[in-house]
Structures are given as structure tokens and as C-alpha cells.
Length: 506
Image 1 (cartoon, rainbow, N blue to C red):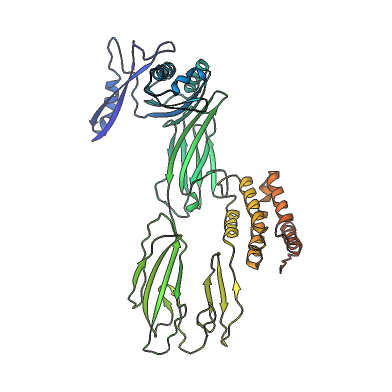
Image 2 (cartoon, rainbow, N blue to C red; image 1 turned 90 degrees about the vertical axis):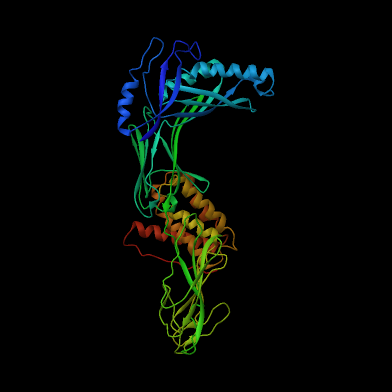
């Protein structure tokens, strides 16, 4: 069985409003029929006639419109107390004037004024149309209304265009298509994606292709990641001095994330001093916090574990503490861990734990992105620390630089933002005073260099040179950066040129 609402569109002798053309009246009823009977019911209903009315169309879609009309001082009384007589007269007058125009739209159902507000005199209203409206007819009616009232109108329609989304959730790193279908609109739509409160224009890029067709548009996506999850909007705009009409359709796309898993043990190198000893080891598994629901499974090798999830903050953390027998020498819960029963190890020093000879100790950076490393030689002897700690804000700029041309936003605008943020960060000497931060700045510039040939926006290119001539506040460092970028650029032009890599020390 299949339930549906069908609509009688009746041409009546008595109009809802006069002076603008024939109005329509909608009647609703509900039938429950077998799906195969729909065509027969439709045929039967269209044959219904009498002297006063007839069924001349049968549709199952609804167009909703929300709008505002900005009026002159003639309607100042509409701002009075809603219980007053002057408000009722003003509201009824405007309502009848609007119905006189909009009720002549084919399939017109209801119109109501929901609110008045200051800032000139602004009335919010809602219109329901029983089925698809002709966009040009809507423009014509709106022009009549704005001319009659010397007003301006903004309209937002939903239901006129159809957005077809892939089945959720979309597999990670897959390809998919989002399609927008519109009838009788000879303009190109704007594609947008809203994610984490930020709205991006969808353009042609390395991961997206926008195709415009006769009756719609589509976006082909490839290598879909969490960056492409969010609310998609297909927007058609029709504007003039007296009106602005937006036809819009929106829907959500979720992506089945594959999180980056960071797993560590404490201690990283359990010190098993005898064959019967037991070492307590804590395994820490972290993924970035998200709305995804993860099933956490631990692979065990003769180890009894208890998993204790912590409340999500910036990360989701799962802990497991285990008794590790001294005879276990290799893999432990998918994490390479070794004891050092042979007695060779570098003793704990400062933040560095006991580390087996021939291995490298790794710890996460504090309040920064990246890791710190220190090797324990086979002698055994500690070598100097190698730091990969990068300022979190600078690391964020690096991620933006990697994604400037994927199709989320315009390449010119994204590039200008990267250069602006990089300039602001690198002017802070306390941020850029380490080799990892300086190296990351150069990596960002090298990444952006590959995209400069596609940029025609002069402000974006100027942003690059302003950055290069004002960043870092140190002439030696600035000159080294310029030299490095110049040599990299020349080497990309001339395959036979000598590649030069400068090391900058402060």
C-alpha cells in the first residue's frame, strides 16, 4: 500500500483576489491505494468536471517560499501594537495587495505575513505553492507587486530545484557525484559546501569538477575525505534592482572517516630484568575527535587487557593496561615494542625514557605539532635530539596550502589567505626561531610555488612578495628564503640547472 496526498487545482468563478487574473483554490484529501493504481487514479481525477469547477492538473510536489518585502512609510501602522485596530487595517491591506498578485500563480495555496520589523518597514511572509512554479511567471508577478507598492522583495524558494545526493555515508577516498536538477532556469547555479560553520564555494579543482548542463548542474568528486563532508547547496540567483529571488536546495553528505591512529606505549621499551618478572605497560590509542562512532578492538597475544575510554576532548583516547611477560620480544598490540634482556640500553635522561640500544626514542611535542626523536646508538650512547616540533598555527597554514586548489573556494582567494596568515605568523620571531618552523615555512612556499602559474589575481601574487620582503624580521633569514625560492623556481624551469638547498641558521 502507498499513501499520498493529491491536490485538486480548481479554476473557480469566485476569485481569492481580483484585478490581476484568475486565482486558484486548493483542496486536499488523502487516499491509501496500491502503488500500481496511481496512474489510474490520476486519469480518473482529471475527468472530474461540473458547471463550476474542474480538475485540470494533479501534482504531488510543494514549493515553499519565504521572503521579505521592504515598504515605504505608507505602511508605518503595520509596526503598531498587534492588538490595535490600526495594525489590523494595515496588515489586512498589505495581505490583500500581496494576495491579489501571488494568488494568480498556478497552484497557489496560501500566503501569510509572519512578522513586521524596523529598518524601513519590513514584512516577512510565507507562500505555499502546490506544485512547480514557472520561474519567469514568479518574476513577472514579483515585478507587478514591487511596482504597485514601490517596494523591494527578497524571495527564497525550496522545492523548485531537486538535489540528488549519494547514499550516506560515502566511502573514504571514493568518487561520487552530486546532481542539481532545475526546470526552466537558463542561468548557472552556485555550488556551496558548509562545514564547521564555514561556507565554501565549490569550484573546479584537483578533487572536484563542476559541470553545467541544460537543465541543471552536477559536481563530480574524487578522493573524498572529511573535507568534503557537510551540507551541500545548489543555488540559482535571479536579481534586479527591485527583487532578489534565490532558488535553493540543500542536503547533507557524510563521509565514513578513516582516522589517523596514533598508538604509543608507556614505557616504550619495557625493561624486563629477569625471566619471571612482569612489567606493567600502558598502551595509548588516539584519534582526532569527531562525530563518528568507532568500534575499538584490541588484538592480543596471550595478554589480558581492559579498555578504558576517556571522555572526548580534542582527541578520543583509549587506554589499555597489560601485564607483559618478559619472554615477549616483538609485536605488542600492533605496536613494535622490544625488551632489552641483553642489558644494552641508554638510561633515562630528562624527558627521555630507558631506550634499547639501536632504537630511537620518540615523544610527542608539547603544545606543538610533530614529534621529538633521540637515537640510542648500539654502543649504547644517546645522540643529540632531533626536533620536529612545529607551531600549531603554522602547521594549520601548511594544511591550507596543501588544499588551496582542491576545489573548495577559489584558488586566488585561498592562496591570498595562505600568504596573509603566513606573513602574520612569521613576523613573530618567537614563533619562527626554530629550524622546524623555518623549514615548514619554506615547505609552504614551495607548495604554493607550484600553483602560482594558475593564479591571475594580482593581489594574490603581491601577497607573496609582500610576505617575502617583510617576514621573519631578519635580513639573513629573509635573503636565504628568497635565494631558496629563486633556485627552486629556476630548477623547475631548467632541468639542467643545479639545485641549491640552503640551510639557514639563526
